[in-house]
Image (tube, rainbow, N blue to C red; front, top):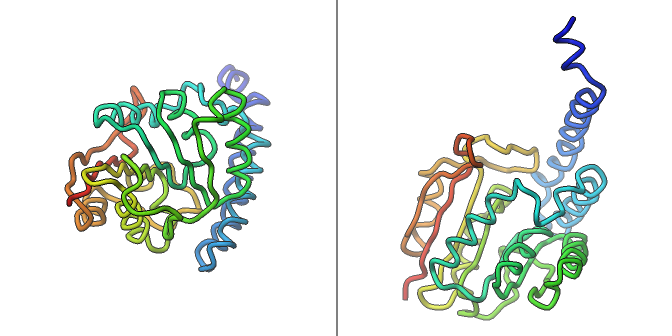
Length: 239
């Protein structure tokens, strides 16, 4: 009785119900992503997902949220490589703001118009609206000239794509000579979502990236005090 009264609280019950409803919602969206090849339809899916996140998990749209450990790890890598201009592909609404707050000149691209709109609002609220250029577009066909950026970030993107190799190739194309591409994907089934089209092992990531440049780093990382849950790769453009 003591265990039940301590653990079966209203808050815990609603959290569990939200999790069940979230998975059902994402399964519906996931079916559309798996069967639909038109990128414009993908944008509709991710618009719907963003609206749900804003309604039920608004705390995730705060760039100071303590659990944003992963973009802070990326900031260290970018600084170590002397990066100034960053392209964040499949950016979401928050990571570009974190990069801008750390002094980088950021271009953020996402397929979701809603994400771009919300990202602009967050950037303005935190005083970095002038440091971020927002674009709506697709990872497989970047609307930028060759050799434009010091670094391209593609995190939690490849698992959503039908052809991730096209996104990597496009990312490398817009890098300046010796620029770096930083990628990250969930390790195996960690952070699984019905919107994911595939899972990755370390070897899978190596095979995806090796044709496009020199792999400088390939390792697993995780939230402090937790097991590794993400595969991180840094690729340097050659030539």
